Image (cartoon, rainbow, N blue to C red; front, top):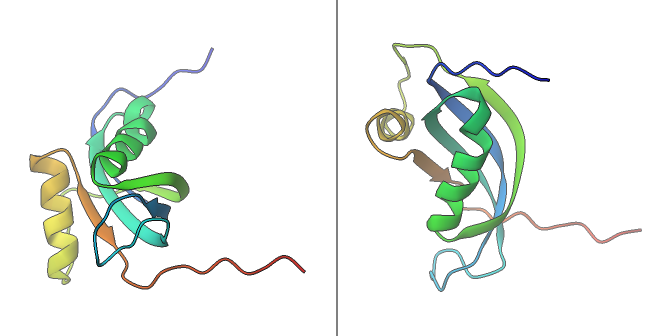
Length: 107
């Protein structure tokens, strides 16, 4: 049996996801890198991130890196600060990187 830490912490996750909306900035099917921050216990963090991305027009989520963030959070980037604040005050914060990821053809 695996035991999980139930303490809520702020997590930062990096990965990729595909757009599934009619947003002109992110056409449906395009893959983009993301940074998501959420406040969660260890057991629920992955499900919370996937649900947050799905509810904001993203699917086929692939999580590459997971990290807990120190409190208080210090960063000079205003987008990172807003993302962290959304993680602590709302459901979570999402940063989608604008350049699409193009999968290389198999050789």
